[in-house]
Length: 198
Image (tube, rainbow, N blue to C red):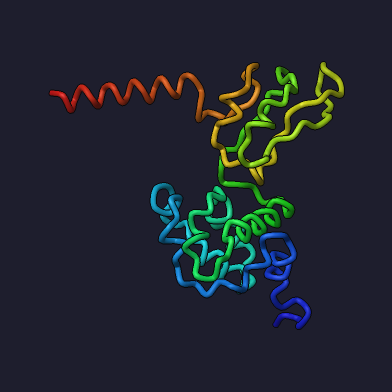
């Protein structure tokens, strides 16, 4: 049995983070799920109302393992439709922040910086729509202590914008946007078009 002072400890942690204070306003109507492009196009198990219930029921590990914790892009399509006017993305971001602080890893392959080639120009920092990249002084073998781009895996959504703007090709999503993968995808598409044309 839980000690009275530990009841809803997870919920209280979430509510203490800016954005998380709306947690208890949700009455699980499901409107957010009906508006969500992630749920409709990417991950059928993405379900904000279920995540909020997990938090309220103190199911911390289940919340950390939920794809909803990691895949919300904070587009806020759900916000105008929510009858309670809850910024669901703020609550989800609060859950994600706690998960990352407790050393839980994202299920997304986030951007990685090549420390040997990064020139700390800051283009990726300016371009990142999720504020997931910062210039940080870092000790690098053979280069000493220098400024480098650093990716916060708790904020990165693997959109690839950083890779697109990097002039030294020093940052990107592992495997996803390599020249080889893109050429393989194009070749596969061309082959499928030939089959359809026949």
